[in-house]
Length: 265
Image (cartoon, rainbow, N blue to C red; front, side):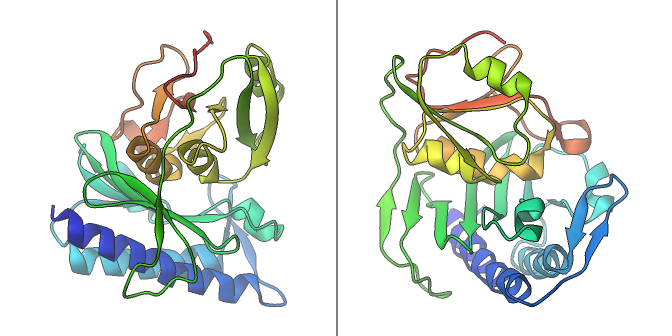
């Protein structure tokens, strides 16, 4: 894989998909349908998926592509692939809360090594560079050339005053019980894969997820966090979270800055 080409393509496709999504988001109304698993899907999910998938297949025809909105891709086997969630945080989108993202990632040997997370309604974009390090680009965003970027680095966490980020739509008692094991200075809520990015920027130290996710939900944010010096581990045994699992389903996990002293599940 040519990482320079990959980063340029992923960034451009994320921005183009973001434009499609915002056209629908800003419309007076849009249809919400239910998928077979009862999760919601909108025209924005479908339009963004079609755009990103076509772009990735044209640029990288020999690379396996897994995407949330194409069920036939979910039976694919392999540990090196492109993986897409064209609109993560559909509930945030439907409720017009803004915390939704476009997510594109490249997984190598089970590890997300490159990725982009773009939050069009928040005008924030995070991605890995060709060397694997992570940046946040400051808008306004041009499709053909990147603008000013700021290097991302996780916090040097103070275990006596941790900043925790948790899901806005999926917060539950099990999550609160785990968070309560730490000395927490403040807790904030965020939607979608933005939670990984808040750990990557140092705006949070810890993001525990005690709930169902799929690899397309997490891969891009995981790549950004890796590139900022952070890590993502399984909730049960604190081993690294791997990708290419059966059905692309994740176990519970913890995303964190390395200085955080993790508590047992």
